[in-house]
Image 1: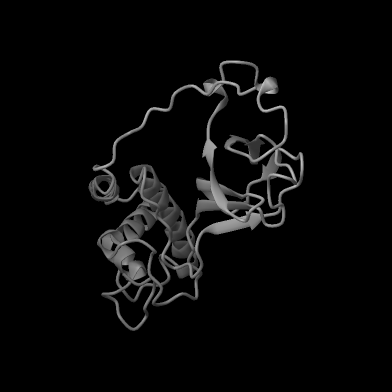
Image 2 (image 1 turned 30 degrees about the vertical axis):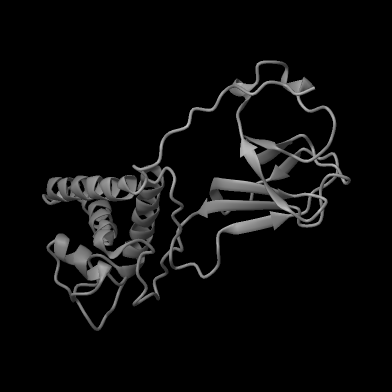
Length: 239
């Protein structure tokens, strides 16, 4: 469903929200497009989070983006910590470039998997094989060395990112997920407007949103049902 096609009141998230609220399709005063845009973007991000939580294995990315969700940075010899890009919301995969020009995967772990002292783990620099996340930093274990790694653009990140937000001048742009669930945007944007006004449509909107959330979760969750969950064993210090 398009964002706001002012030539068609039947193919627009904005006009659908007006209809859900009992407003006329020509009434752009009661619920201004600027206010709807703000609420629609909040609904868009919320729906994005629902899809991420449901898609434990499959990567989901807003189809409005024209580039792939990857980023590279240059490694610094003996430097363990690297800033995660601000636009990356979920890390899907991390790779490092070795000294022969081959990419290899860096495996995620957390400190609870370390049975011995974290400070004794991988004391010598080399080719990173594990990473941990501390706040907005990626921590590499071991720290990279110039002999084991290609430092220039030697760290590659695959990530999930936020949505490509709507702006008030958008017309035919659509949400970047499958069309079956586009109405989630207009439903939630209608609810956000109705709540402070205590309208009698609130309960009806909440019920429709709950039903739509279940459909989204079932659809995206079912895509992963053929894959087994793998339990990772504790990581022991390599000396």
